[in-house]
Length: 273
Ligand code: DGL
Image (cartoon, rainbow, N blue to C red; front, side, top):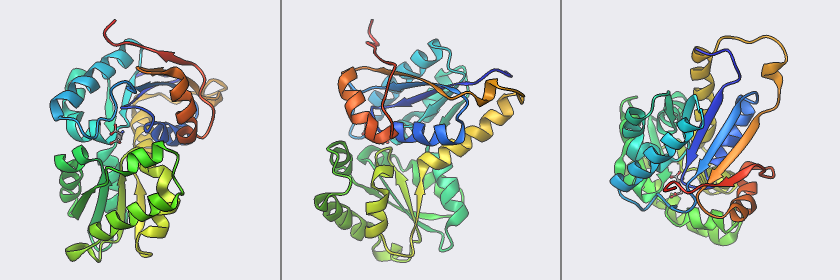
């Protein structure tokens, strides 16, 4: 147990996890954050379990090596495919995005039917389906592979993206899931599409953002780990450091839209060094 400002390690395949960091900064503004974006090896969403697990464990060791006291696996794909392996390999608590997202869906769904959208790998793992089933909910998982590149292109409010999203959601809210009342955003990039998805999804549907639910889960976890601290130290602004495996310049340029502020203290790392 520690009474200092916590150092939280956030891991993602690249830029998308900045949506989770943004949510964390709102809920826990008085922490030190280390963000690791594996930009040289993204996307994870089309890779195998073995590959994603190997990359994610390397990143977890890197963050622990930089004194992270708690790890947030912001990447839905890495959480869905490798949370168990990351947790076994790590020496600090690990929080993924799937359980908090499922918990939030369970707390709001009345029809107990939920649609989950995510990458191909996340959907194939059925991690969300299992987490929702454990809470008594039925789910229809739908892979939406075109949405990640469209968001990275900056087309978050573009007619092409709206058309693509409409096709995916029409297919998802079909058959036995016409009465689903909750849409879980099971990918780091989708929070940027929230206004567009709100327009496209059936009006009765509530949208669950795994980033927000995860930030609240991390805050709850920290309250068990940390002793309350009185005084100025906890009220200081968050300190952020970023580590990326590809171009620093590209991360700063693309990342700003995800985090909603300029990115400073960005360092290139090569995990093989
Ligand atoms: N971060 C990934 C996720 O949340 C999306 C991008 C990728 O495929 O690497 O699933």
